[in-house]
Amino acid sequence: MSWHINILTLFPDMFPGSLGQSLSGKALEKNIWSYDTINIRDFAEGVHKSVDDTPYGGGAGMVMRADIIEKALLSIENPGKKIFLSPKGRVLDQKMAQNLSQTSAITLLCGRYEGVDQRILDAHDFEEVSIGDYVLSGGEPAALTLMDACIRLLPGVLGNAETPTEESFSTPNLLEYPHYTKPASWNASDGKTHDVPEILQSGDHGKIKAWRQEQAQKITQKRRPDLLGKK
Ligand code: ADE
Image (cartoon, rainbow, N blue to C red; front, top):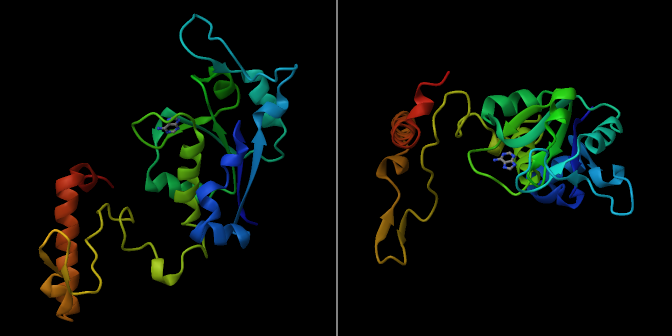
């Protein structure tokens, strides 16, 4: 049984998007994960098939209607965990991605316009999830991001070469140490020679490990000191 995602959206052509390429694209072909898009507009009525209306209380923009979203939602056989992508939500982190990658059925609701009628979220117990403190024009790129973070954790998606134990945001909350490859000495267009740190060319695996740990610690302290206190 593969990891399955239902996506409620007005823009089904945005999927699988970037997830149809590279490792996630291969995993999709192998049926390690699968998805269905549900076009919310298919559940709208009337000649205009409008899915939104003006907000009660006034104000700018349009709000997506609860009744139409509900019809779309009820068409899904096994919706599972329901998530609304929204900048008001809990911010996605690696722990959430790990949990979701172990959840077999998930439904993502992607909003457009000013938002969705709050009652659809209340009536169907949607959890709100944000991908960061900035506002996108719709939930679709956020859904793709959430899915990407989960898909790469599914068994069989990453090869041994890309195994996620030592990278950024694996269990210890450290950012990754810097990487280098050939040539050992590189004359860049800035007119300077950039050399690979001597220690990485020494072959002394103990020293290399210690150096990498120190680099990871330093970069985390400098950029994300908040991570060092996290469980
Ligand atoms: N929709 C618009 N902005 C968003 C964000 N930052 N995260 C999730 N969904 C969004």
